[in-house]
Amino acid sequence: MGAILTLEISIFSLFFGLIFGLIAALCKLSNNFILRNIAIFYIWLIRSTPLLVQLFIIYFGFPQFGIDLGPIISGILGLALNVGAYNAETIRGGIISIPPGQAEASRSLGMSQALTMRRIILPQALKIIIPPLGNNFIILIKDTSLVSTITVVELTLTAQRLIGSTYKPFEMYLAAAFLYAILTSAASFIMLKFEKRMDKTRR
Amino acid sequence: MQNKNKENISDLMVSIRNLHKSFGELEVLKGINLDVMHSQVIGIIGPSGSGKSTLLRCINHLEEPTSGEIFVDGILVNDKKLKRKNFQKHLNRVRCHMGMVFQQFNLFPHKTVLQNIIEAPIQALKQNKEKSVQKAESLLEKVGLLDKINNYPFTLSGGQQQRVAIARALAMEPEIMLFDEVTSALDPELVGDVLRVMEDLAKDGMTMLVVTHEMGFAEKVANRVIFMADGVVVEDSKPHEMFTNPREERTRQFLTDILN
Image (cartoon, rainbow over the protein chains, first blue to last red):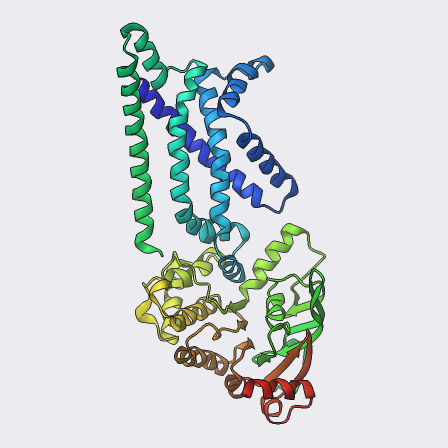
């Protein structure tokens, strides 16, 4: 049961983490002073503080201001914001690695900035981004174990509870580790498939 | 053919007034004035660092002029009066009428030859796909690469890639073509095919600005050659005069240097 909740939390935070990452990356590359600095601040804030503290602030701190999101939503939000900051830098790195001639060619053909990003730059950047993005996702899946500290009964907390009734910590934690390994391996496998698919048509 | 002697204002394809461009402290263009008539083919030559490419890139605003005015087909390209967002739209419109070909081809590597050519007509001009594909096929036929229509750029030679890049620019049906040292990155045996395509284009009456190191091409195809040095136009004359009897000492020096 715990493994399924871990999987669900992973998928949701992965999805929102990707969206946060893309938005933050585009903002950080934007000419707009305000957007750029918001993105810089967000990335700095997340990367300079521990995930555990971020989760505590969202779950235990926010209710003080009347924002009570409950354990699961708090967990997903914390994880998504966290991985989003790392994704942002990954995505930004991919975008700026595309030779400027690509954007120039696209713009010289009368394509707008947005079209150029969407049709020309991002598809090319994707190929460069995928391996490090996969890396972020694997870290994310393992980091979901931290939401056990904010009372989410996911894989790790389930294991802990079972230890309480069985007194077999070695077997239980080993089983949990094994399930994490299955999840992360599946994630790597999917990313590898993606990579392969991009390679067929592009160099 | 139009009468090239009559300098009617409506015949002006490009008109550049007192163009300056600086990169930080470095002033690359120091007051360029240039009028280009419809269907004129202008070869722009000069030593590296003379500002030839920068001039070309200012015309379609890949570089923002520091001061001065650039008119293309009567429209002010660097219109300072427009607000930022409107200016971007204005630029997109203006650029639809100008084709540019780059030294490094800059084909989109994730798209096939066909997709490279139909991308902008479909996305920027909102042309329907069928019409765009037909147009692309006829252009590829013209540049002799119809058999490569479904290839990815990396499977093509430099010369083939450059001809696709020309076809891609032509698909927008531009009124003027800007060529930025388009044969400089090619192996010598591939240069001819690209120049032949450009020559055909000139014969069809396309207005062309060609930054080039191919003096033979400039002499044969251009009807005007401009020699630039240190950010100014030093000499502007008929190709034959430029190459056989240059007026300026600076031009003479350059031509002597490159011919040896």
